[in-house]
Image (cartoon, rainbow, N blue to C red; front, side, top):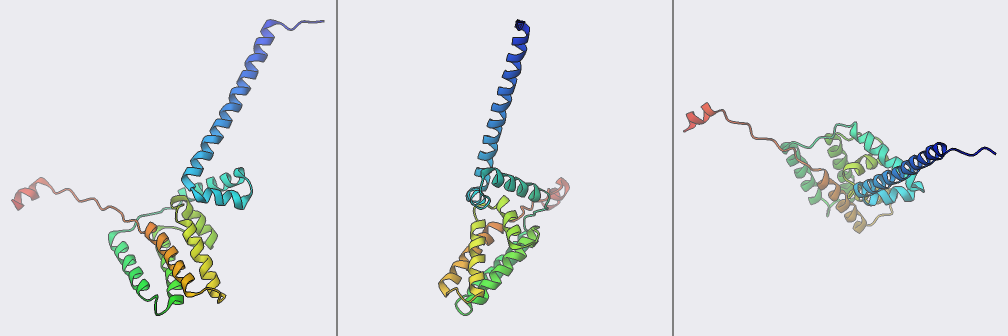
Length: 197
């Protein structure tokens, strides 16, 4: 019977050690990725797991969202645009008592306009919500809740209190999306400062 040389045992041992290290590294990397996604997406992470059935599928979906949104050109609003949107919201909200159903429709439309102005594509609702969840995971649930109430209202199933809640949900998303671009003050040339003195 042939005996295995010491050198062969060393090679086998090193190979096993490399495999174990690679497996541990892959496990730790996956854990770190999971933790990163869970922290970034918050409640949306749990929703994706529940909807898709497994963590692996949910994490793949969330990474796909991140990649898709990275390719978008999402911009902050100019101060003038932000003021215009804020004024439009104020006018809309002031009409709630007289026309709650109309205000819910207007709130949805205003949110869509704001999303479009910021650079979000206007695909179907679920795609919009998924895109929003990448940068605004804390409020995407508000958007889904508002849309659900609006859908019930179209079927004649929502009362005024639910419509009020829809407007509150839309407002949470609206406020989050109303980011303003910081316009940096222009440097004043030294010669201009001397003339002003």
